[in-house]
Length: 591
Image 1: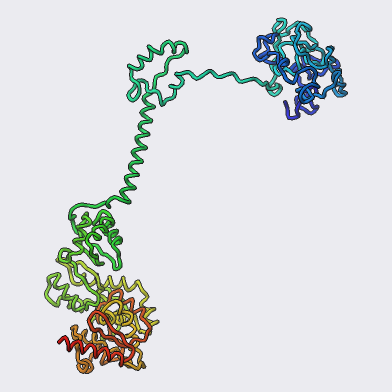
Image 2: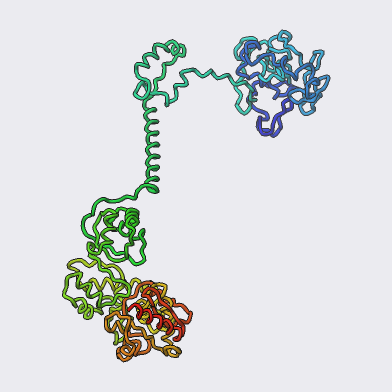
C-alpha cells in the first residue's frame, strides 16, 4: 500500500502514485484491454509452493468455511462481499477509466462457488480463468493469494521459473509493494522443566550454597534420558549468582540494621560519653545566660566532654545549676566528672563575683586565691586601670573613687596558681564589655534623661544594692528616677540611699542614724549631694541593669524592708512613715 491507497477490489492505482507504472513487471507486458496492475499479486505468497490446498496448513478451503461466502455476495450479512464491491447480479459494470472488460463468470450463480474445482481450468490451480485483467486463476477473496494460476500471456500449464506444472514462483516484490499477510502466530512450544532452572538465581554450578556434585551426579543419572531427548546439555546452577544475591541481602539487612540502631541510639539511647576524669588542662569560658545545652555544646567543641547530651544528663542528675564563668577543666572528661568539677569551687580554682559585689571585696578575693599579700590586686587595679580594657566612657568623672567599679562583671572565673592579678581583672572587664555592648546603653541613657552610659550603670548599681529581690528591681529603679527630678515634692532632687554611705565606708549597715549620714560630706553621699554619685557603687548584674533600663511608672518614691526578704513601696512620705513605725515596733519587740 502507498499513501494514495488502493481499494480492495479492481480499482486502478492513482495516476500520481509513485508506484504507478512500476517497471518491475516490464518483462510481462499486458495485452491490450488488460489492466497492467491486475497482476496475480497474491501468487507471490512464499507459502504457495504447491498447487494443492491440502499441503498448505493455511490454504484450506477458506471460502467453504467463510460465513460471508454463502452463495452470492448479496447473501452476506452486510450485503456486500468482503472487499467492499458493490453487488451486481450479472457481474461488474464497465469502468470507463480502466479501458478493459471486467471478467464475466460463466457460472449459473453470480457469486463464487462453494467448492473449488481445479480440474475445470487445468494448470491454473483454481476455478477462475486467467484472462486479461483477471485474478489469474485465484479466488479474489483468498487471503493467501492462491497456490497456482498463471501470468497473463503465459501458458496456463507452464511454470516460467521452475518448469514444473502446477507450481509457481513469482519474482520477489519489494516490501512496499507487498500486501501484508494475515497469519496465525505459530504456537510456542510448552515450557520445559529444565527451562525453569535456566534463571541465574537457580544456578550454582555445583558450588556451595546450592546443590553439590553429588546431586549433579544424581541428576545426570536420573535426568539423562530427558536431557537426551531435548538434544541439549543440562545447565548447571551457578554459585556466583547465589553468592551475589546473598551478599546483596546481607548488605541490605546490615545497612538497615545500622540505620535502625543509629536511629534508636540517637533518640532513645544514652548520649555518647567519655569515662574517667580526663587529662591535661584547658580553660573554658561559659557566657552569661547560657543554658545547660549551650554549655554542653561549648564543652564538646573544646573536647572536654564527648557530647552535649552527656553533660546535660549529668547536670540534671546533679539537680544543681552550673553558673556562667571561666573554668579550668580537663579534656575527655565524663559528663559527670565535668559537672562535679564545675560545681566545686575549691577543685576548679573558681573565683565567683556575685551581683552587687564591690571592687574592694573582689580585690581581696583575688589576693587570697592566688596567695598574694593583701592589697596587691588593689594596687595593680589603681595603677593599671587604663590598661585593662575599660570603655572610653567609663572614667568620665574626676571624683570617681575606683574606675573599675561597675566593670568587674559578676560571673565565675578560674584563678589558678601562678595567675597574675592584671590578667584576672582584664578577664572581668572583658566580660562586662561583652554584656554592656549587647544593649544600647547610650541610647537608653538619653531616653531616661541621663548624661552618659556610666550613669545608667550607676543607677543599676543602686538598684542592685537596695533591692531585696528581683521583683523589687523595676520599682526601685522608678524610685531613683523620681527622686532625681529636681522639682519632685518628696526629696527635691536627692536620692538619699543608705547604700551610698555604706559604699564610702566600705560597710553594709541598715540602721544608720540620719544625722550621721546627712552631715557627712562626700561626693558619693546622696544624702548630702543631689543627683547620682560620681560612679557606680558596685558591680550590677544583668537583671538590675535590665530594670534600670525599663523602670515602672507607678509614682513610687519610698521603700522599706520589714523582714529583709521583701520591700514595701510608698508614694508619699506619710504612707512611708507608717511602714517605718511598724519596722521600729517589730525591732523593739524582738529586742
